[in-house]
Length: 477
Image 1 (cartoon, one colour):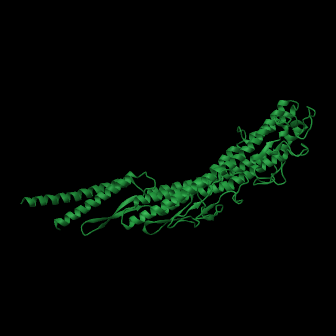
Image 2 (tube, one colour):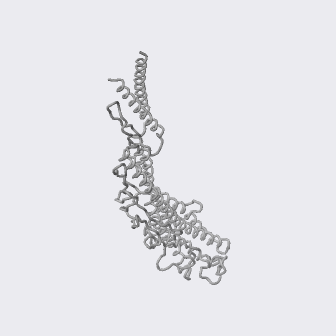
Image 3 (tube, rainbow, N blue to C red):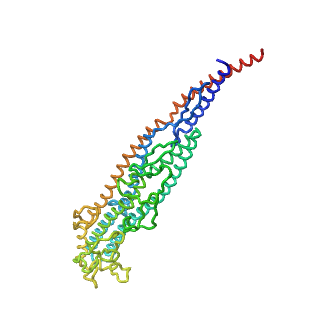
């Protein structure tokens, strides 16, 4: 072998070793970088030594796809569970200060105390304050539910903006990767960036990544929706400022979702966006929160109805009202938010008289101060078993406290179900992430590679040094 050929072989080896060392260094430096794909130098034999063909980015597409679907499931279930937990906390638990069960129990106790001394004004005032606490508790729960809907609506708007921006980034990265591949340039860094962008999309909408020519990718949802396959698609949504209980998607008073201008179903299992955080936000706004509102309304309606009994109050309204009006023939959505104590018993109202709590809301003049018949009847009304007239709660007759307990159980059961799903999906996502990382950068393995690279570099450098010494010897002859 001629010295020229030996020199060429050695120099190509030095080049390959240098590139390999650079790649190992990049792998080790990015061992904790999210979305980083391990690099390997691709070498091939040449007429003189070896040739660096390119850099291969090592990533398991199948594991990555499964991990994305699991993370979308976590985001979906956890988003719903968090919303239900906030509603559940607003209702509260028995003996918890400020809770609905505590307010109802205090009201019942105030009626018993007032019935024992019906002529004591402070006892009647205690009933008024306790009744106001019950109404205020229902109002606060209804407000919390509508707040959850408004928060979900605003979050949908932000999510849509994020998805549209991310899809545009994927389109741009696809174009850059394609151009560099045509020039036979390394695209690993761009692929890392694209993976991180797609991971962000996948939390909001589950996606399946499909390879296209030139290193480009297309994104589809598991139910067949096309997010990007060439030009990026565009989602459309208009946030609503204030949401009231009667506002629904079906009535047209809330915005739906569009894709490239076409309406997209959001409330079905086969929706193009089903499974991620975006779908959960629509479910909270359009299904979960309205269902909770219906349950709370049913209990509020039941309690108002208990005190409209003509045996207690011969007038059109009882101790509790629907915004100072009697119950209508058909229960209206949002009655829990309008529940209020009758102004006729409120001494702060020009027409209000505190003694009407003892003598009946419709009474025109005070009765005997020792008459506790109405107070006792109101206490018994709370203990009487009746069923709710509408809503998702069971049609089992219960006392007022029992209905509140069923309401808590209803919300809690939904929350626990979604939390169980979130836990399962979280464990699955963690397992898949670990498996994905196992195929990533292993620092021990990279250090072993570096030792081999150093040995190869030293061997090729020794060849170059030897040839140089031979040439120097020839020149001295």
